[in-house]
Length: 329
Ligand SMILES: C[S@@+](CC[C@H](N)C(=O)[O-])C[C@H]1O[C@@H](n2cnc3c(N)ncnc32)[C@H](O)[C@@H]1O
Image (cartoon, rainbow, N blue to C red; front, side, top):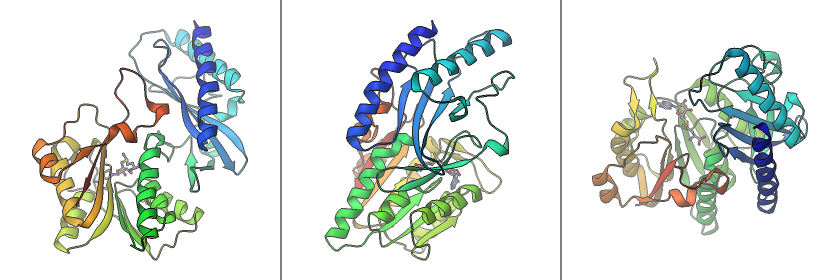
């Protein structure tokens, strides 16, 4: 059975590497549950620093299958061995994330601090710090690659026309949208996230790309509260990206965030912050999400998911990893 998986992975890899090379892409998805009995998402990252080497981020997707512990461990080690062989990658460069941690696959699971090394990867010009072992997510969401390129294109276009861009990034995580916008010529930006850890990561990404922290501000705040204040202060932005988590509750927040319940207010507030001619991008990865119809009509929100989900994340008959909307004021 592992043969069917290995053959499929080999085929995917050959096709995807050619595809990526033609487009100058060095981090991409090579496998996504293509063989249902092997429920994994596998991403390929070509690091440039501290050493030029390829890493694989392998996420097991929980299907609720029942196996004994011994069967499960043997199966998982077999799968990881097959991945390493097909991709010609040593075991230390395969990083496995799975739902339940059990003993026996430790050569692939490196969750101790000593192994949690950071690497730098490229996405076109911009450089990003990634860390495969410390958290569930590694610091760069690959499914947003085309949306980052779109934002950079808009900002660069405005710069060419002599129009400076004030950029706003809400729920910024490690600031990847801001890095693209700043390098494309944004005059200034504000990057908001609740987490100190991720704001520090964004600061490192800024430093990696030579971004001037005096013009590109980091704000640690609850976006819900921050938006209310920004509207009251009549702040103005030319391009806004808002990409909330599906749910969030933290001691640092007054309330819980529920994207289905709260998106109409948040997007509405963002729209109030837009300057005339400004552009807004809203994205969500909640699978059951339904856009508020009155909001969509009032702001002329246009769904752009077909444009924003990259080819390496598309699977026939399957929902993509996110949905996205765009509005111009
Ligand atoms: C889905 S990630 C955003 C991904 C990011 N836009 C990107 O493309 O890289 C969600 C982020 O929202 C942040 N977050 C969660 N609740 C928040 C809140 N109420 N206010 C501000 N940030 C919040 C988390 O710390 C996390 O960094």
